[in-house]
Length: 110
Image (cartoon, rainbow, N blue to C red; front, side, top):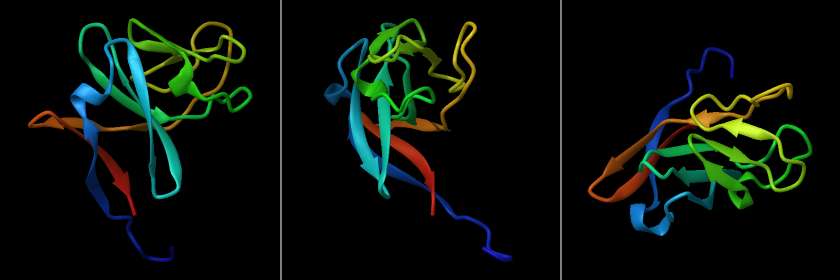
């Protein structure tokens, strides 16, 4: 990308009602799997859907507080930072989220 600056844009990925409370939905954006999560308090987060440990599908994990537990080996990933909690080390990419008229929009770069 010599001299090129990535262009960021917002993509409408689903309805807010498509994501259950304390649940997730998996979407594919530009060939990348993103997990979109909704907490008990109604916050919505978007992160790369693959756990940094063994690539477990985070959208199939258990959502609690502002974190998700990987269904494969119980790593806990903070939804706001993408960082593994506790003694585990690793992180996943996070994406900015906006709710627009009950639609979930995720910011991605081209």
